[in-house]
Amino acid sequence: MALSTHDKGRVSIEHGEEGKSCEKMTLCVPGQTKTSNAKELTQEDLDKLGSERALVSDFKQMKLEKDAQKNWDLFYKRNTTNFFKDRHWTTREFEELKAFREFESQRLVLLEAGCGVGNCIFPLLEEDLTIFVYACDFSPRAVEFVKQNPLYCPERCCAFQCDLTKDDLIENVPKESVDVVTLIFVLSAVHPNKMTQVLENISRVLKPGGIVLFRDYGLHDHAMLRFKSGSKLGENFYVRQDGTRSYFFSREFLAQLFEEAGFQSVTNDYVLRETVNKKEGLCVPRVFLQSKFTKPAQTHS
Ligand SMILES: C[S@@+](CC[C@H](N)C(=O)[O-])C[C@H]1O[C@@H](n2cnc3c(N)ncnc32)[C@H](O)[C@@H]1O
Image 1: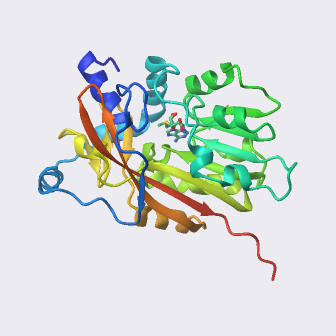
Image 2: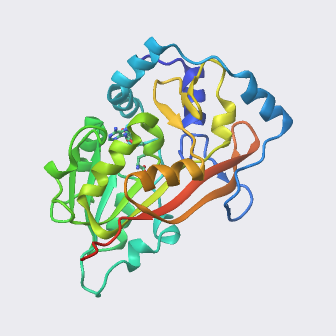
């Protein structure tokens, strides 16, 4: 898909959760707030959301689903490794990445599902020498970028291509062998009808008692309110200019999704923070959903 310069600007804002090409979004107010309440909307926001009733046609929706992998692969062709910032916040936000071991020398086994070019895994591999990381993505280009990273080494990392909605993870990861799964800004890219398949797939490789660490777009995030008319695919589900899609999660929807796939909720909160879009000179309110879900330990009767 060829994009004009204007389109590219829009796409970087639409993708710009913590994307570095979003003209260096920086924190405007120190820190962030965690809350169980959805962000309240202004009358202007309510009017905008209420006026968007027309959905993208079924034909176009089917094509977007068919082309999902291709559109993400083209995203990495255009942006290479230059779009998302390395995620150095993961050990701060998720202490399980450090403290999940029963004993000091135990090797933590992690699966980063939908790894992109590795912005989540490489800071972890750098920080923790005993971690082993499985990393998968359905974009072949993204997986190749991971393998080309100087920090990639097969003794500590195994990257492979996998469509989480249809390829069984067990082909690359032993059953019930993973301590922690990270799902960072990935489930939002999956059609809501297929999210359960992703969670069931992950569950098969997660140890009983293991945990899923989740962070993604929250309901009423700035990016959701900015979509132009003609971008709406369904309730809280939108398509960007580049053909990639984004769902905006309420905590109730996410909890139900995980619980139906057999997980138990540990924490599930909105994260509110403000970022500055330097290009536009705007301070924008971001809403993410940050959550943890465990796979129950086996009970013996
Ligand atoms: C916003 S990026 C996040 C990448 C990474 N988790 C990070 O934190 O930087 C979303 C990623 O999900 C991948 N993805 C989307 N749908 C997928 C699917 N069905 N199976 C595997 N990967 C998928 C995309 O290719 C993309 O690399």
